[in-house]
Image (cartoon, rainbow, N blue to C red):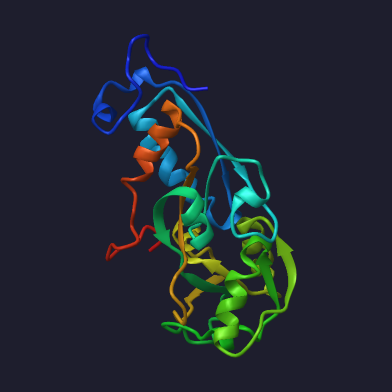
Length: 234
């Protein structure tokens, strides 16, 4: 549980600029696999502001949009859909867009983008958490569907499968900035046929927030890239 120096008030917006050593402890969050890279975007500035605060991240797997259905958690990083907005404090981080990850074939010219219909042809591996409904909605909008042959809760595992040359995968474009384009692989942006889902930090509305959660919320509030010309995942 978070601690602060005796006699100090709870963390508030003005007090966030006070010496960070007054906030200590471990804050735990659940994170969906496709957004796990976003935990690093929070952890880095959080550690700068509060060097004695640790962030414990737990991946939440399963066919659900948000961690609260799979894990008893009061905070997490997930999709900010309507149900979440009604029951949680929400701090948008980025808009999730997608690329088609394939083996690189030098004989095939690169393209600026590819349609979801075209992308449905190869054999697929996919992150289990991402479907349904997120990817299914995009494929359905283009009049097709995705028949994944391999499902995993690890984005890194997707890259490993695609590397064999037998598989393709739809991956959030954030991961193409994390891993780059490894030798032998190619990332092609998918057309934006639906509004991009927003991913963000959620914390429970009910009950008072601890000083740790307030520090986490204050940090996340500075990272909103959903209206920026250069989103956090691009």
